[in-house]
Image (cartoon, rainbow, N blue to C red):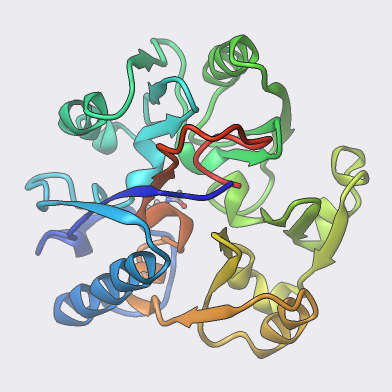
Length: 267
Ligand code: CIR
């Protein structure tokens, strides 16, 4: 499926106050802005029309757009983020989403972060994590089922979100860690497994027949090269210091009316 649109938000100068468990040193705002702009430039180069929102004061994690909504071909589902400090981000994204899709919502007591939602073709894997609870996962499962997607739940035992540890990087190919490589749920796919010291590269994006991967993981880059599609490496050191990766910094979707066999905001 061709991704035609993305929504990003410029990180605010309070971004270092966001939630983080990473121990990678203090993040630098100017560097963050430069890296974020390069990320937007890459989407632009892939012919994606990027809507760039202003920083959201008081919400230092708000540039991690992926967590606040799940895009289906017919609707946008506004999530209910698991972290209390991020709940208010959802009302801020609503006017922008309304320009593209009718809105549905995850309702209390459900919680759900978009980082826990992985589309592979017409299947939607939903991670049960510290951010996404059973009720939120069931609500999203019911919604995607109404729009022709199947769904299943996957426990998230390590990493922040499901997509910290497994991503779809080809029509039938998953990039995952050693623990998920043993999961029954993933055995129907071609698997590329990364070793623990390169797990940060698991959050690689497959967009418009390109792979966008974080810079600095040579073994991962070698394995990705076997897929023989163009690879773009991006330095995202400052987002990584805030527990972020490539997928979280945009909400990606298609406005194409051509029939597709894929959906959701991830391919
Ligand atoms: C958080 O803890 O919510 C942010 N500091 C990082 C969110 C990263 N989002 C993602 O991986 N989808």
